Image (cartoon, rainbow, N blue to C red):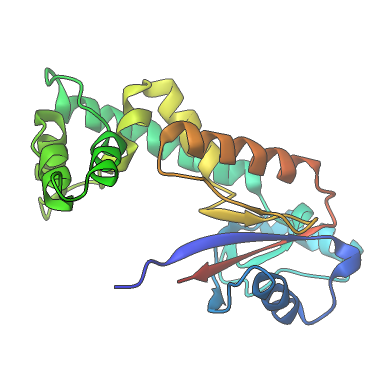
Length: 228
């Protein structure tokens, strides 16, 4: 199956025309991303606020369905609600994770096995790395829970470092991830994304991406697309 990822594209209001999808495609193409489609990633402001705010905007919400939209001016989007909602969901997920892994020894993260494989792929194969990681008791418990058809949520094994950072840190991690998505194309043309799957590298990306969002004006436009 293709690896589908969500990318947030930021654009100054002055650079946006009525053809927002075409403008987004052109910006992505400059970075070699040609297969992208709009996705309802953002939460719109409540209806009573939208009716008042829209009067001052020449650009409205893009592909709005219910309370979600593929994008639009920042002032029409409820980014704080998105962050609060995902932080709360991550808080609850951490509580469940703690119950599932209670008493198990702290495992090594995946990247340590991957680095060993990358350094000596002939003697330490991909299967060696995968089985070595998955056989750790805490990881095995998470995988067992994820295999249950009645599971309440997924316990991502690539979140191990974030889980181990504690309940409050994991909830904050969720809030940081809510808006930027997997990568971000900034208003000044930079493509931001984590340089690896390591927790520290993802936090570096999330810090830069959220700082960029905070610096945008309310009339600036953000759009979310899925890419392969």
